[in-house]
Structures are given as structure tokens and as C-alpha cells.
Image 1 (cartoon, rainbow, N blue to C red):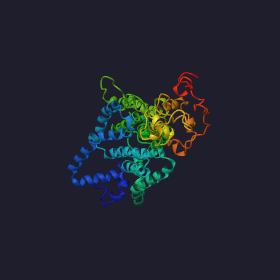
Image 2 (cartoon, helix red, strand yellow; image 1 turned 180 degrees about the vertical axis):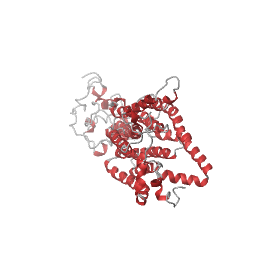
Image 3 (cartoon, rainbow, N blue to C red; image 1 turned 135 degrees about the vertical axis):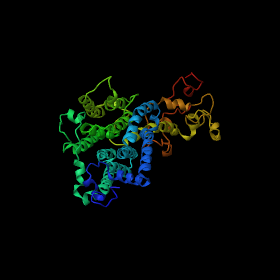
Image 4 (tube, rainbow, N blue to C red; image 1 turned 90 degrees about the horizontal axis):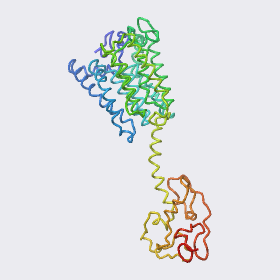
Length: 462
């Protein structure tokens, strides 16, 4: 209603007249659309719709994994059991549509980055910042794109943010007062633990949250761990925010779930369990473990400092995949793994046409002109002798070559370009064929204990 009002406190003067309003224009527009249905009905529809986003959010995070790595579903089950109660508190008890939109759109942006769609990644992150201003720290996700895709994505992000916020700034320059709105500095906040004892929000606090979140996200991308950008941005918010609202924990657990499932090899989501214990379960210990307000602030500081240390300093051997600076790195690993069987299957194709039947372990009946070739036929090569007891074993000859060596074999000396391996870049180097005895037609390279290397008087006699 305030957004559509034309009075001095509504419309484009909304943020100047109500600096306590911390939700973006996109969330306000959706709230206005729900209000058309009716104040009561619109709220019920919003709560039901937001409550139904928990499982789709987990499914969206799970689909960021490659298909072969989705077999260990026990981690997903345990992470969901920890994440869903906290997410439900955000959607039902607090009913913060702006936070739900910001976190959901950030996961959509992660999908766009993983698929290398720079335009959609920029649109999703701009929409997240238009729903909740602190979500602008997720912009570090765009740096995970290849260099040629970064500038288009950043341009789309900047345009999307300008379209939503610039009209308010042009209509009333006091709209920036919303960024300087102060709230009480809670005694259980991490801000007091690090020594900031001001009664309200310091003037530098909001810009510092944004700068620290972006800087930590850039370091994560540099380390090849761009999936942890959301976690680091939320950790920076919890570390420097003067308030201790419980719905902050939902964003923190979403980030830890992404980190545990997408980046680590752990069988259990240890980061998610630790975050839930530090930020959520500590409030309900009651008489068992009575924490003071300072102790609760200390636990929040442990989370805000420990998470970046774990994400940025965890050894690579504990990570799920080798680190790659861009989002395309996992796809390269998958391609090489899937292409290896094709390279092994292409190796028998280097055998000339006359012995392809032998290399497969069978005689090709479609070549009647080769069945009658005798061992003493003039001009016949070592691979053209008949299918008798002196059959040349082409498969064993292929196995005699050294592994991982693409040098041409004796029967490849006269092979044309069409007989080269289709999956190898370039023809194999040529070598001289073995010397053939003019009298008996046997190669000097044959082993004496094989039938193919038998002497003129029979096998085993030379």
C-alpha cells in the first residue's frame, strides 16, 4: 500500500520517509500483489508458499552435484533434518519474504553460474539484491564464470540493480538514509565481542558487511570454492551485525549445506551441525548449559571467524574435487572420465582391414578372399595367413606393445590415414616394418615359442 501510494510518505519517497524499511522493491512489489487478494488471505498464501520452499531448496542444492556424486544420499538426509526446522522458523514464525527471495534467487544464480549462463546469473543476483539489499554481497559468484562471461554478467547485474533502486534515489536523495538506519547493539552480538560497544549501529557497519562479504567471496572463487560464496557473505553479516535475530541462522545453514554437500568429502555434514549448534541450539539449552549473553556473542564470533578459516584454509585433499577457479572445472573432469573408454575402444581400429576380425577374437566370414590364404602364399603378409593352427594372434600382438604408447605397430606400417585412431589428435609416427624371410615368409620379430613364430618343420622346431 505504501509503494502504490502517491502521498508524501509513499511511492518513490518510501525509503526516505520510512528508513526502517529494510526490504527491497521486488519484495515490496510481491507483497503488494498478495495484498490485492486480501490482507488475511494474502498472508496465509504467502506463509504457505514460503513454507513449501524448504524441500525444493534442498533439491536445488543437491542438483548442483554431478550425477555420479548423488549416490551418497545419507548426507542430504542428515543436512535436511538440520536445515528444515530452521528454515521453517524463517518462513512461518518471522514470515520474511525478502530473505526467502534473496536466498532462493542466490541458489538459482549458482545454477546459472554452474551452467555458464552469464545473463541469467546476473538477473538472478540482481533480483536477490532487489529483494534484500545485503544480498548484493553474492555478486562474487559472477567471478566464477570464465573471463569472457564476467563482464556481461556484471553488466546485467548492475542494470538490474539500477532499474529497481535508481528511481527512488532520483526522486528523493534521502532514500539513502535507509542504509544508515540504526538498530540497538545487542549484548549477545558478535559485534560487542570484537570490541564495538556502541549503543547503536556504527556508521561504517553496513558498508563493512558488504565489503567483507564480497572480499571473502572473491578469495573463495580464487581458491576454486565458489560454492561457498553464500556462506561467507552470511558469515560476514552475522559477524558485524548488531542484531541477533534467529532468522539469520537460516541463511547460514543454507550456506553450510552447500559447502558440506558440494565441496567436502565428509560423510556427515559437520559444518552444518556445528553451525546449528553454535547459532540455533545454544538458545534452547536452558538449565543444562546456561549461557550468558556474552557467551552467546562469543559463539556467534566463533562462527563468523571459524567459517572463513575452514572454507579458505581446508586442505585440497579433503575437498570433493580438485579446485578450479571457474565453474567449468568440474565439467572438464567429467569429460575426461567419460572419454577414457572411447579412447580404449578406438585402439583396435588401428588394425588393418584384413585382421580386424582377428582382433575381435572371431573370423569375419564376409571376406571369402582371405579364408583361403595359406601360410606360404607369395606376397601374403604375416596377418593374412589362413585360420589354421598357425593363426596369427592379433590380440596378443596388440598387448605386446607398451601401455599408453601410440607408436605404430608392425602391421600399421602401410595403414592409411583412415585407419588412424579417431580419438587421437594426429597420425601415429611411422616405423619400419619387420624383416620378412623370403623363403618361409615368417617375421624375424616372432617369438620362437608361439605358433606364429614356428620354424619350417612345425611348431617348436627351428
